[in-house]
Length: 251
Image (tube, rainbow, N blue to C red; front, side, top):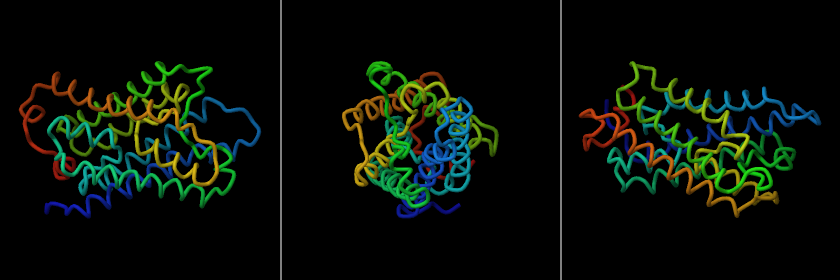
């Protein structure tokens, strides 16, 4: 397979992240609109988790062979920290991912209108009266750790052929369930930032003082997962200096 050009990889990351935010984050205000004044239920949490998992599975197969389908700055930085991705491309990937998250958020507003803005646009946030900062840090750290560890395990030839997308999607579904009640389960810096910027631009209330909690926990969780995987895996491929490329992900 011919190696993808940088602009193709960035386009894939942009679109993949936009799809993730539009479908995954968009499921939050969509369910709120359908629910009306009825109270939030556990089944809705399951639907939201399933929405994220489903779109991650789809993008893994659609964009994985082009860019690796990181669609998450924590994944990109974790790959780079583990020597599986070139640091020189990290800023480009992160910019494409955040831009995609912004466009995906705009798409939510375009489809659902002002009620989505009034409902908070699915922005990840925590209630300090219920969840303390240490709890929020731990929740996002663990959720991101689980996700990124699953990505490493699935991508680096640990998953049976063709199964890597499903494994990553299932990890997303599983991680969201226990983390969402505490922090909204962002576990993705682009998913954190994009909706916040759009909500702010449209006059919504954004808790910018919580942003550092998400970013610190998510990036640390991703890097910790990368090094833990390298420590435990002990295979030539996992511990090699081989840089991750789209062809590796596609196998």
